[in-house]
Image (cartoon, rainbow, N blue to C red; front, side):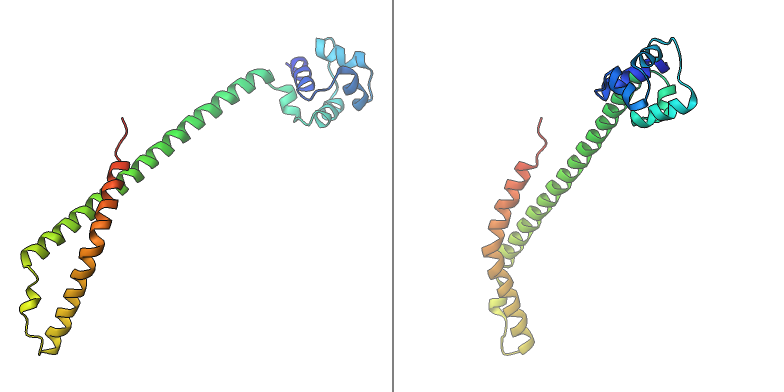
Length: 169
């Protein structure tokens, strides 16, 4: 394990045996013997190797690095898949909430239009000599005037929003 790890980490850092030997103040043949498993570095040299290769000693002594990388990639891809699923579910929930809100807005607009149509502006028959009734009549007339002009625009935009937020098959 140690021999494969030294070799694979050295290569991943782009170092030759000669360059690693110079950094460790040993001859190239020493590096070659370590990588062939003919000898092993002592504990002080392991610490030096880990510093030069910027790798913990535990990794040098651990399992094969290439297998760990494959396991790491698999774990990362599984985590990314879970994150993508969660984002998709959140986006679907937001889309549904927006859609139902727009449907509710359309229903409220239709209900108010029906109410105004059925009431047929009853405030026209009110006695406006009474100040309270006059204020109420002006407020009701103002609401109706604004609603008749703004509600159709909001209704059309809501219908467009409902169409755009429908679930795509």
